[in-house]
Amino acid sequence: MTTELKPLKPSDYHHLKLFVNGQSNKLAAYSLPSIIVWSNDIYQPFYAVEDNTLIFCTESTKRPDNRHLILPFSPDQEFSPRDLHNLAIRLGFTEYRFIPEDYIEGQGLPEVEPYFEVIEQREYEDYVFLTKDLTQLKGRRYAKKRNLIHQFTRAYLETGRVEIEKISPRNAGDCLDFLEKWCEDYHYESDQEENLACEKKAAINMLNNIELLEVDGLLVRFDGLVSAFGVRIHLTDNMAVLIFEKAFSHIKGLYQFLDCECARQLFTGYEYINKESDMGIDGLAQAKQSYHPIMRLKSYRLKTR
Image 1 (cartoon, rainbow, N blue to C red):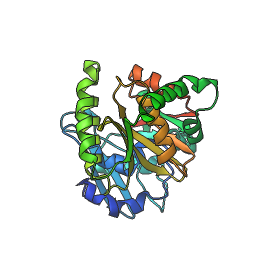
Image 2: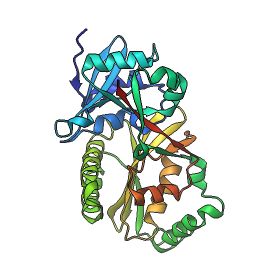
Image 3: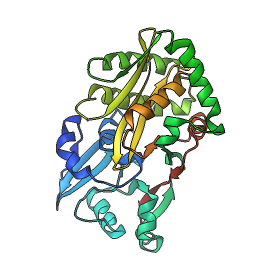
């Protein structure tokens, strides 16, 4: 069987979401809008539909070692390790990435290891929080967050310097302007430059297709200018992803205020908030851990034998 892999575009969202609706993988990598927007000069997502199964892969001409598949989406079957191995060989791939721990445990290592070498992706371990924890910020462990929000509210919100808006095509351009300034101000290690560039392009793709991809976002204006925003993406029936959460660091309490407002306004009906991984960046790991995740979701690579 010859499988035609097509470049994945935002316009593909509506006819592909039927395959993804009801999916149960809790890693943020399995959110369809996220898969679509993560397209740039280095990584290009492709897809194919065959036998009522949706297949995703990532190609990379600049980083050929990073070519990979993720678990297929199918309402009819769960792919066994043997099925995954056969699919990878047929499509010319040597590995899968972002394999949830649930899959490894469900299949069992004795079933997986004859077909794949199993490698943990520690830098892509997702942080998951209870929505009620991030909306209420109760208890001593969140005292510093509450104090920062209180100071921000008293100094800026109550004095009329702050406005909160849902992101829409009307104000997405203002978010893009903010993103450009945030990236200029952000201090990162040289080896993280590529990650930042890829994330910036993904955020631009998301903001330019905010309605088409059926995602919700929140922005905060400070003295009329967008100074923070965050986007929510549906993942499973009880979990959504908070993605591209950014705020100017020089405004004290702004990030904490944004985070709490996103949890309150964007995650109604969801028990859990997935804040993605820390990508191995120490500062990002510390920031996520400071909100006390209820669980960490491990991610694995499967390399064909």
